[in-house]
Image: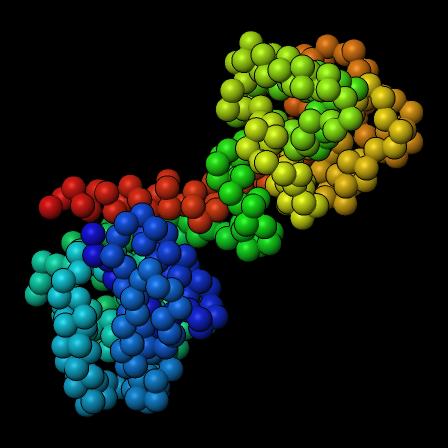
Length: 410
C-alpha cells in the first residue's frame, strides 16, 4: 500500500507530532508499505521512505504567517484562495498514486488554514486517497486559541465532519472533545495512543535489542532476571519451579537466566541438561530462557545492565554465595530483590530484600512475588508501558489493523 504522511514539518525538526510521524513512517515502511512524507520543513533522513518538500505546507512559511495574521483578526485575505488553489494542485500531484493519506493535526489546527482548505477540496472531488485525519490538538476546544477563531469559512473547516474520512485521536479526552465538536457519535472516532521509543529511551545495546526481539521479552509480566552462571550452587531449579507456580497467576511471566555454564566444573554441563529437562517437564518452553542457548559469548556488562532496566524483579535462589553483586545491581536498577535468606545476601539487601529459604516451596515464593509486584504501582505501570505503549506495540495493536481494514475496502 502507498501511504503518505502529512504535517507542517517533519524530522529532523524536533516536535511531538514530528516524532510521532517519524515513528509511524518507520513502522509502516518496515511492514512493507511504500511510504512518503509530505512536509514544509524537514529533510529525508531514512532510506526506507521518501520525502517530498512542499514549502507552503509549513506553518512558519512567511506567506502562510502573513495570511494567518489576517485570518486571526477575522479577515479573509484576497490571497487566501490563490494559495488554496496552488496547494491543492501541488498536493494532488503528490498524492496521485497514494492509497492512504495520514494528515497529522492539519485538519484540527489553524496554523495553515489554506492547507486545510486545499485538503478539503481534494477530499470532496476525489475518491482517493483514503483520508485519515489524525488529531493531536483541537483548536476549537483550546481556550488559548479562541480569539484567533471565527465563524464561517475557513475556520469552520476545523469543526465540521469529513464523513468519508477516518478520524483518529490520541486519547479518550480528545475523542470526547472531537465528538462534541463535530456532532458525531464517539464510535466514529478511533483512539490510537502515541508510543515510546524504548530502545532510545533506555539506550539499549544492539545485542540487547536482538535478544529482546528474539525472545519477545517485552510482553512478559513479570519479567524475572537471574544473572548467574549455570552451576548447581545457584539453585536455578528453584527459580524454574517458582516461575511455573507464578504463571498460575501471571500466564505471561518470564524468567531470564543470563550466564553461561560455570567454567571450572565439567559437572555443570550435566546440571544444565537437568535444568533443560525440568523446563520441559514444567512446560516452560518460551517462558524460561537461558541466554547460554542464544549467545555464544559472555554477555557484556552493558547488555546485563539493559536487562536489569527491563526486568521487573531480581530472583536469586542461591544456596551459597560469598558476596552478591546482583543485589547491588538490582538496587541501582530500582527493581525489587527476591533472594535466598543466606548471610551474604541479607547483609547486602538488609530490610529491603524479600527472603526465602533455598529449600522453600516454589508456591510460597511465587506468592511473595505476586504480593509485592501487584501492590507496586511502579511495577504495574512499567509492565503496562512495556507491553502496550512501545511504538512497535502501538503499531501492532492499532495501526496495522486500521491499514488492513482500509486495504480490505478495495
